[in-house]
Image 1 (cartoon, rainbow, N blue to C red):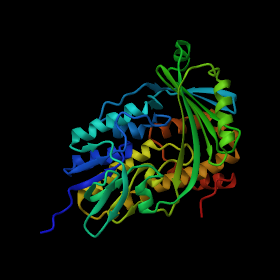
Image 2: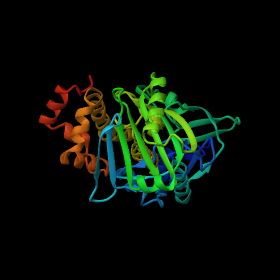
Image 3: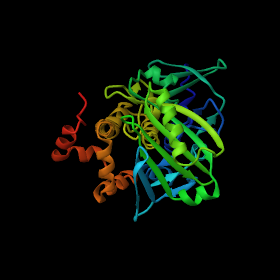
Image 4: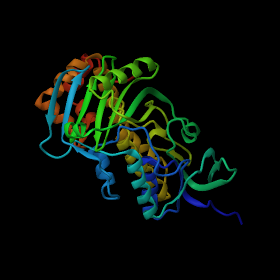
Length: 380
């Protein structure tokens, strides 16, 4: 008699998307294995800012390793016209180091019953009517009823599913050792700078004894991106700080019609190209899509429910983000001025705290017309 697959759910990749999927599936009683090519804790290039949505998904499951809680934001436009706003009703963002945060999620997934197999490099994924098979670099295989891919936009599972990306951006980042003066100056406050290249911006995120400084702009402008980061660090008076890490990464957003599933292989987080196109924030998208993928995979029912959840909840937010990125690229000064207003600041804080939907706001007729006239037209 033919045996069934070894596992109910095999997860490829142990970042927030994969580990939240593993946690959800294991908590539902599924037999879950996570295949991770590295070892936790491992460094990941990332700003490390947790929005309210991410905190609500994380806090009940783990002790979030916060390095700082941000109540104030300073905005500048290419280093000028600076102003600072403060939140009176709780933190705007919670700062973490990604190695700490991912490791905490890893421990939570294990407590829920998932098995995490590290140093497991995935070479290929295949499937038939009843089983998905993951082939590893050591020539072993893992079989499961469902595979959840969370191995990044350049990973094996995204290629297997056929995810198409229509926006690619290059982010460059340095982790700097913070002096005592730096700590006092930036504790509880972050900086956002709208860059001179359309659609670009920079950030300074405080994390206790470190400062994360980074910039992002469209792929293909590598020299300009490097120059922006170099000038940004110098402008902040941080050029002489010790560089602890210097790294870069590509963010890739899926096209509207790109699949998030092929048969019994689902992709979540970066592997599915799920992130907010304007800010390029991806952790909240990873945690939401991962949790949904794990829940659907463990349920034993129709896997197309995952497609529906992405289409109903995340796709509209991404479409709204594309429109706002288009508007921001054309009129960064206008966006800067709006954020200086009480209404703009309130919208920003509510978005960060997870109480504001850009998609819902853009469905209002007056807002839709105004954004369209200013250049933020709907796709298609």
